[in-house]
Amino acid sequence: MTPAEEQFVAEALGDVVGPQDLAYAEEQPLAVLGAPKLWPPRITRLLMAYDHRFPGGGGRFFVQRMREVRSYLTEPNLAVKVRALVRDHVTPTTSVVIGHSLGSVIAYDLFRHEGDAGGRTPGDVPGPAVHTLITCGSPLGIPSVRRLMKIEDGDHLRLPEHVRWINVYDPDDVVTGGAGLRRVAPGLVDAAVRNGAGDPHSAVRYLRSEPVARAVAGGRP
Image (cartoon, rainbow, N blue to C red; front, top):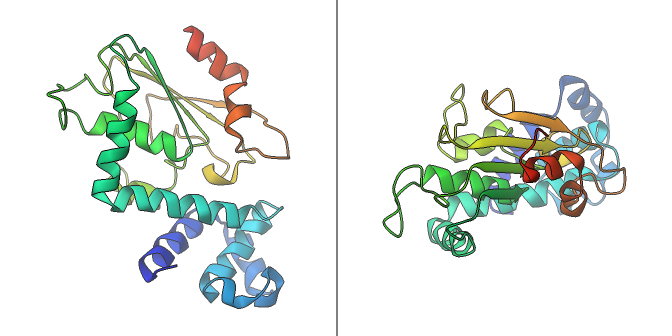
């Protein structure tokens, strides 16, 4: 883990753990999480706090996902290629875009980069017929992620007026920090689901959920 990765991961973990979780972690020996050399000491402490909130080792999974998010948001050439790849799969008649986990960040990012490729015009990204964005298991609610997207604290996430946004989350999903996005995207509809204890972040379970099915069908989630 590079120093820059460590800083971002520490900030992201700090965004989602509470004072009680931090107090618990401070009381534990570093060896509780395994060999201290696996992670820098401050990351180890924060992982203890996170796993106290989300038992089951979810902190390590969270770190992996945050490193992926950071790679996308800090490597411009990679981001351009990824957005282009997604655009290539959006046809002129595509009406619904679904983004899971990092995919939700990429999907939102597409709407932010209006007109940056292919002569597209504002409101025409990722496709002219798109009227619905569905995000699942999204880390967009984490302040550190939004800051890396150059979104100032207090600023809201917004889509073009003609695009409705449904965000589906599991309160036990470690990548979301257990919360929806309504507080940072006032025009959005949050829908909580229960994907089961085995893998609350599962893309398949999200896609099979009733709110996603209703949103794709054009109804209320």
